[in-house]
Image (cartoon, rainbow, N blue to C red; front, side):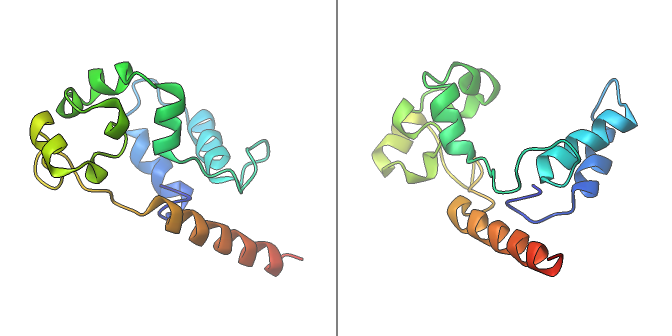
Length: 128
Protein backbone atom coordinates (compact mmCIF):
# COMPACT_ATOMS: atom_id res chain seq x y z
CA UNK A 1 0.00 0.00 0.00
CA UNK A 2 2.68 2.47 1.01
CA UNK A 3 5.29 1.74 -1.60
CA UNK A 4 3.31 0.31 -4.49
CA UNK A 5 0.34 2.67 -4.24
CA UNK A 6 2.22 5.64 -2.72
CA UNK A 7 -0.37 6.04 0.03
CA UNK A 8 0.79 7.74 3.23
CA UNK A 9 1.62 5.20 5.95
CA UNK A 10 -0.71 7.02 8.35
CA UNK A 11 -3.69 6.03 6.17
CA UNK A 12 -2.74 2.37 6.58
CA UNK A 13 -2.17 2.75 10.30
CA UNK A 14 -5.53 4.47 10.71
CA UNK A 15 -7.45 1.88 8.68
CA UNK A 16 -5.67 -1.14 10.18
CA UNK A 17 -6.30 0.10 13.72
CA UNK A 18 -9.91 -1.07 13.56
CA UNK A 19 -8.84 -4.51 12.30
CA UNK A 20 -6.62 -5.29 15.27
CA UNK A 21 -7.96 -7.16 18.30
CA UNK A 22 -5.07 -5.93 20.43
CA UNK A 23 -4.43 -2.52 18.88
CA UNK A 24 -1.45 -0.68 20.32
CA UNK A 25 -0.69 2.82 19.06
CA UNK A 26 3.09 2.57 19.35
CA UNK A 27 3.37 -0.88 17.75
CA UNK A 28 0.93 -0.08 14.96
CA UNK A 29 2.60 3.25 14.13
CA UNK A 30 6.12 1.83 14.31
CA UNK A 31 5.19 -1.10 12.09
CA UNK A 32 3.65 1.10 9.42
CA UNK A 33 6.65 3.45 9.56
CA UNK A 34 8.95 0.47 9.16
CA UNK A 35 7.00 -0.86 6.18
CA UNK A 36 7.07 2.55 4.54
CA UNK A 37 10.81 2.94 5.05
CA UNK A 38 10.51 6.10 7.16
CA UNK A 39 10.74 4.72 10.70
CA UNK A 40 13.74 5.02 12.99
CA UNK A 41 14.51 1.30 12.82
CA UNK A 42 13.12 0.27 9.46
CA UNK A 43 13.95 -1.68 6.35
CA UNK A 44 15.72 0.30 3.71
CA UNK A 45 13.44 2.41 1.56
CA UNK A 46 14.41 0.53 -1.60
CA UNK A 47 13.13 -2.79 -0.24
CA UNK A 48 9.87 -3.10 -2.07
CA UNK A 49 8.49 -6.59 -1.75
CA UNK A 50 6.92 -8.25 -4.74
CA UNK A 51 3.93 -10.32 -3.56
CA UNK A 52 4.32 -12.71 -6.50
CA UNK A 53 7.94 -13.59 -5.76
CA UNK A 54 7.25 -13.64 -2.01
CA UNK A 55 4.49 -16.19 -2.55
CA UNK A 56 6.63 -18.28 -4.87
CA UNK A 57 9.53 -18.21 -2.42
CA UNK A 58 7.75 -18.74 0.89
CA UNK A 59 4.62 -20.67 -0.14
CA UNK A 60 5.97 -22.63 -3.11
CA UNK A 61 3.39 -25.41 -2.78
CA UNK A 62 0.61 -22.89 -2.20
CA UNK A 63 -0.68 -24.45 1.02
CA UNK A 64 -1.16 -21.15 2.85
CA UNK A 65 -2.54 -19.35 -0.18
CA UNK A 66 -5.01 -22.07 -1.08
CA UNK A 67 -6.20 -22.24 2.53
CA UNK A 68 -6.90 -18.52 2.78
CA UNK A 69 -7.78 -17.81 -0.85
CA UNK A 70 -10.09 -20.70 -1.70
CA UNK A 71 -10.91 -19.19 -5.10
CA UNK A 72 -7.44 -20.37 -6.16
CA UNK A 73 -7.71 -23.91 -4.76
CA UNK A 74 -7.56 -25.53 -8.21
CA UNK A 75 -5.05 -23.15 -9.76
CA UNK A 76 -1.78 -24.87 -10.77
CA UNK A 77 1.30 -23.78 -8.82
CA UNK A 78 2.77 -22.11 -11.91
CA UNK A 79 -0.02 -19.52 -11.95
CA UNK A 80 -1.11 -19.52 -8.33
CA UNK A 81 0.40 -16.12 -7.56
CA UNK A 82 -0.41 -14.61 -10.95
CA UNK A 83 -3.66 -16.17 -12.18
CA UNK A 84 -4.38 -13.28 -14.57
CA UNK A 85 -1.43 -14.56 -16.66
CA UNK A 86 -2.78 -18.10 -16.96
CA UNK A 87 -4.02 -19.30 -20.35
CA UNK A 88 -7.79 -19.37 -20.76
CA UNK A 89 -8.00 -23.18 -20.61
CA UNK A 90 -6.10 -23.23 -17.27
CA UNK A 91 -8.45 -20.61 -15.84
CA UNK A 92 -11.46 -22.61 -17.00
CA UNK A 93 -10.10 -25.83 -15.47
CA UNK A 94 -9.44 -24.01 -12.18
CA UNK A 95 -12.81 -22.22 -12.30
CA UNK A 96 -11.09 -18.86 -11.94
CA UNK A 97 -12.44 -15.79 -13.74
CA UNK A 98 -10.15 -12.79 -13.20
CA UNK A 99 -12.29 -9.73 -12.70
CA UNK A 100 -15.32 -11.82 -11.70
CA UNK A 101 -14.63 -14.43 -9.01
CA UNK A 102 -11.01 -13.35 -8.45
CA UNK A 103 -9.86 -9.71 -8.60
CA UNK A 104 -7.61 -8.33 -11.30
CA UNK A 105 -4.35 -6.78 -10.08
CA UNK A 106 -4.77 -3.35 -8.52
CA UNK A 107 -1.32 -2.24 -9.60
CA UNK A 108 1.47 -3.25 -11.96
CA UNK A 109 4.15 -4.42 -9.52
CA UNK A 110 7.16 -3.58 -11.70
CA UNK A 111 5.85 -0.14 -12.67
CA UNK A 112 4.79 0.73 -9.12
CA UNK A 113 8.23 -0.29 -7.81
CA UNK A 114 9.90 2.05 -10.29
CA UNK A 115 7.54 4.88 -9.37
CA UNK A 116 8.15 4.35 -5.64
CA UNK A 117 11.92 4.39 -6.09
CA UNK A 118 11.64 7.59 -8.15
CA UNK A 119 9.51 9.19 -5.43
CA UNK A 120 12.01 8.21 -2.73
CA UNK A 121 14.86 9.57 -4.87
CA UNK A 122 13.04 12.91 -5.16
CA UNK A 123 12.59 13.06 -1.39
CA UNK A 124 16.22 12.11 -0.86
CA UNK A 125 17.47 14.82 -3.23
CA UNK A 126 15.25 17.43 -1.52
CA UNK A 127 16.86 16.62 1.83
CA UNK A 128 20.48 16.66 0.59
